[in-house]
Length: 525
Image (cartoon, rainbow, N blue to C red):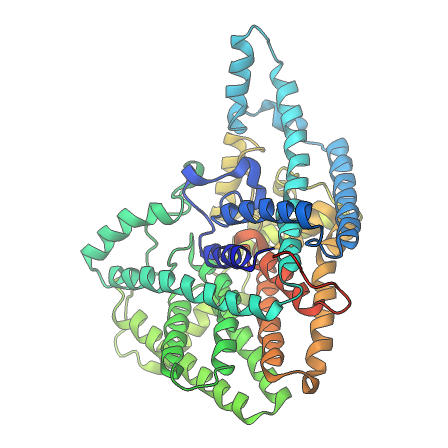
């Protein structure tokens, strides 16, 4: 496999991670499944084709393929069994059949095509058949794009994972150029600059789709919270959980001080933007990764590592004070209380964007926790195999707590589902792990997490032997672990497929922990 082609594709995949909700015109949802709305679909397609070609020609690209095949077979078998049982016991077919045929976007065109050729297809039969086929297709597409994509990355770099880490850092830096540029325009918009507002109105639809499927989300402009090129502010924080540790790693591994100040500026800017999101997910993930950095600093007890960690903490503190000042003194949407001081402003920020995580009714918590609780109850009623992949939507209204039934956002989701149909308008996946438990039970939930658990255990073994590793490799393992744990943590309250960062890291992590010991070097030139 030619390194140049492979490295270019890998760089593009990493760079394109920031484009996770592309405009409708370039989405490939039918073929892409969980990545159909992401720009990484295109380099991944090229990567899969090139990998298959090299395997066919040279027979030495796929590594540990038998083990990967065994896992995917078991995963698909369990998920399909869950789906079959879920479809067999599904109590809401009447709700599906009584909803408009337009709840499946392409079905009216298919029925019209058959009718034009004199073939009359029963609408209920078509809805039922389409529902079954779509769920089955979803299982296979998720396995292919998610687990298959991670496996492809592993096969590419099992014999040179250090190069993959360096390319990932370059991809992150390239992505940040775009993120920083777009965010700078947003900041001017927040101050009331009309030129910046008009520019955002023009360019935003080129970065992501706007007002999907007749809903308000994502809006053309997001008032009072920075979201950059992402569909909503919290997504910047999820990407940050992936990207920031690679910046830290590059800074701490830096041999010369030539770029020290550039890195400091990058840290301050990125942290500044994270705080401007005013998204609890973003702030909590950033704080968690800073905490992990401190833990590793204490664990290593190295002077250089300590000094550079201290620099990172100082930059983060400066970014926080700068963001807090901007929010309270420059944003047009901010109402500043008379006589408010820096301490009061700081307390207010922490109360609204960090402490409020524990509240069940602050901001979006009412809707989020209600859906998560409903998913948990569904899973507890169906503990072994769940209700089946993508079949939870019709169940949720009957499992919502009383406070959830009264929540305005939840009411909107229920109304949309009632009017547009169960198959078209459902409830968001607010919590990867509760959704997996509801849809696939304990069995599917454990299978989904098993690769991550196995990887974390092996990362721990590598880090625990840090004295035997070159310093650069040692830091790579540490900062990769911070990124991976951070992205995994985002799955508590969000869908891991919001970005492709989790699967990207899963493949890279296996390359780092299961390298070329006892495996033939790649000879495909």
